[in-house]
Length: 317
Image 1 (cartoon, rainbow, N blue to C red):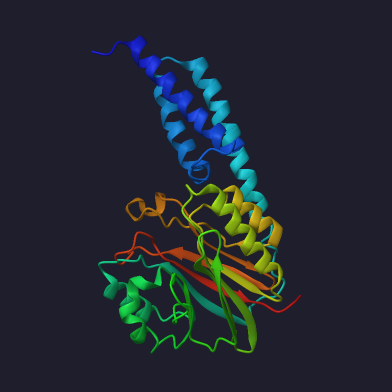
Image 2: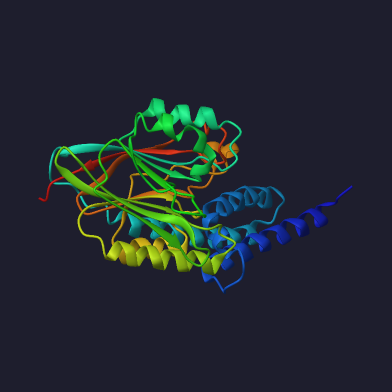
């Protein structure tokens, strides 16, 4: 039977582990997987708060106070990141957008065992634009999807490494496929479309897994350079494999003046539902603004929940 002293000792060890994880996520000394810790920052803080309550009950009041101050500092640091990010959501002076674009961003999962259901969802949803990661997962149904979204860039015989595609209800006047280094997969696309006379460029992206830390920075740098060369209003959507408050994504948004949506719906893991991590993200630049964004309740066999957003295309004030 564990006595009180042993319990208190165990709680202090756990508290020390939480502090160590938060320190790694903040300082980022260059260890493998630290970007994953950054994405889990607020989850670690939440678990720390639960541990804090147990520490108080166990009589570790002064140590619990110190632990609380550390958690509060970590939360304030994370809140500051979000405040900076959302500070770019400038107020819209126009009462109404000229038009609204219905945008779907969905990692369908290569090897999806419910591929038909995923394809049927896309067909029934019939968005204006769909950014589809791991497109080979629904390759057998692309012809059916094209009846609703007839225009496509990506996964059209460009060679090995097909991953990402952008499907549109409207003609794509300028579509480009880029191979993301260092792994050289086709995970970066651009598609210029026009709805109701308003042009906008959609940028689709699929970053590598977060345990390839240096790869994430390289991919973010390539995306930054691409965005810098694009004029006009932008919508950037895809699977970043990282939360918007992780260093590569936050720095990318800062350098390219990207603004987020009103919230950050969790998309992974599916089993966690709204308590998961928002590793799929959407941003805008210029007079495009994400007015509403939600994550799907059903993933249709994917390991990601999809994002669906209403993007208002406004005129200059």
